[in-house]
Length: 164
Image (cartoon, rainbow, N blue to C red; front, side):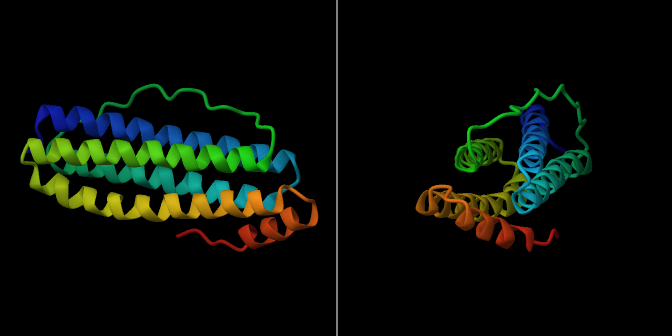
C-alpha cells in the first residue's frame, strides 16, 4: 500500500511528465513550422516517451492501491529564437526532471517505500540517457552554430530516430 506522501508525490510527477510531453509536442510544432521535420520527429518521440513515463507513474500508483488525481497541465512555451535555444531548454528541462526523480527517490527512502525505490531506479537510469542525448545535441548545434547545411545534416540524422 502506498502512503499518502508518496501518492501525492507520484501524482505531482505524473503532472510533470505530462507537462514534459506537452512541452516537447510544442517544440515539435515549432520545428514543423520551420520546415525541420527531423527535429520535429525527435521532439515528437520525446513527447511520446514523456507520456509513457507519466503512465508508468500512473500504473505504479494504482498498482500500489493509491489514487491517481490528475491536475491541470500548464500551457507550454510556443516560440524560440533558434534550434539551439530549443535544445538548451530541453537539456535544462531534463535536468529539472532528474532533480524531481531524485527527490522522489529520497522520499521513497524516507518512507521506506521499497517498491517505489525499485521502480524509481529505472527512471534514474533513464534520466542519465535523456540528459546525455540533450547535451550532445546542444554541443553539436553549438559547433555548427546554425550554419544552414550543417543544421540540415543534423536534422536528417534526427529524422532517422525510431520510437520504442
